[in-house]
Length: 416
Image (cartoon, rainbow, N blue to C red; front, side, top):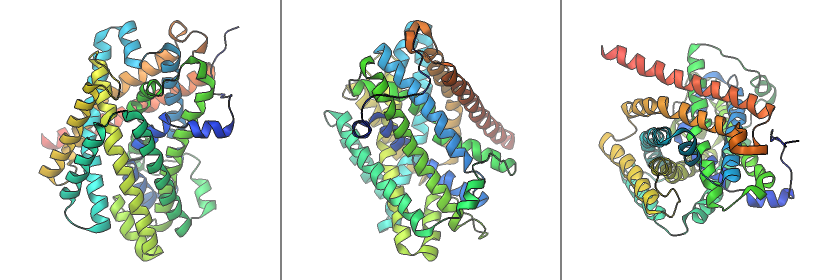
């Protein structure tokens, strides 16, 4: 009887599995960026613990899609877009890669701006100066040889710092455990909360990042023989993502909710922490924000470039020239936007959302369809439980896209 993968992961000692963490941790490092930190801060400061269920639920969906993408890479020995080209034609693969790149390219400016804001909060000087310095450093890093091992080393250090910083901040300020427990039950206080929840879902449940897992397992040179053992990478790596985002929301809810002065950015959050919990909490949180922006600056560019070049049928490896060239283009584009607009303009986010409307359903469909296909996966195709989670997750993707469409249409109506 065929063996179905439905989420149970066995094989290897816990210690070996922890040491082997890599690809999913890379994804956690990029998903926990300026956008996810800002939205978690807004959610906690505005609605207290009521939206705590959002990062928990979206983390489950992210784990599901990341593990499906990893399995596709491990079983087929190909990337998702390579399998898609073979099964559905070049047009589908090209569309997924092109629109995925556009969506990530537009959001890249937020990462360039985030590193500037964080450094400015720590040491002063112009935001644009720091954005330029770290963007140039990121480009130099992207052109190093044997890039994957260096990226993995970087993100392990960065995620470690983020965990210490954000968990340390929460430990300093504390939170109401009983009130926090009530937030696990899904509730939507009002329409604005619903839109905010969809925005949080979009930053935590990144379908482009999940797709990238099929590329990262190739960079690790993992194969089908390691299918069961390496499943723990997807679970623990993305669980770290969920933990960090949840901790930020708890901190914001504890410190700012009910004060009448909600925080609308990570720098607002850090500033309001200082009088409540002292300068130590301020610096801890700001350091965490700095490293979140730094990792996103590098890895986000890699994701977009890889999707684009693979969609075009070029070499999608990190050490290939196409990925290095287009990663550089992404970083430079984000920097130019920061230098011209002195920040992250709302108009650019609208472009990102428009591209995501096309990219996310395509990439989500490819992951779910390929992972559920007996022809592609053989005995390792989705079981019933994984399929149900995948379908519910895809409905969440549709909700995210619907929210993007709503915001785009609202903007158009204002201009008419």
